[in-house]
Length: 58
Image (cartoon, rainbow, N blue to C red; front, side, top):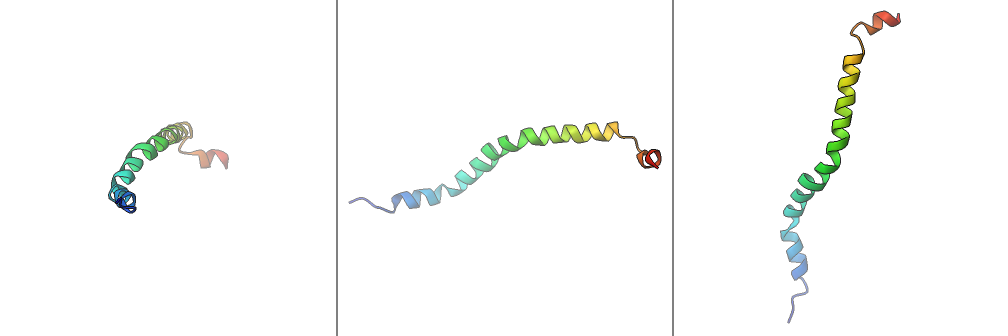
């Protein structure tokens, strides 16, 4: 006789494994590219805009 709840018990046991696999694998790969592009753009804007911009505009 087979246990119909065996698959549910198996998936509960692997919940943490699946969560860590998703968070440090798939999710991290999806976030890295936009994060690096935006970090580079932020650094470029910081370097390109002078400190006394408010004085220049007024």
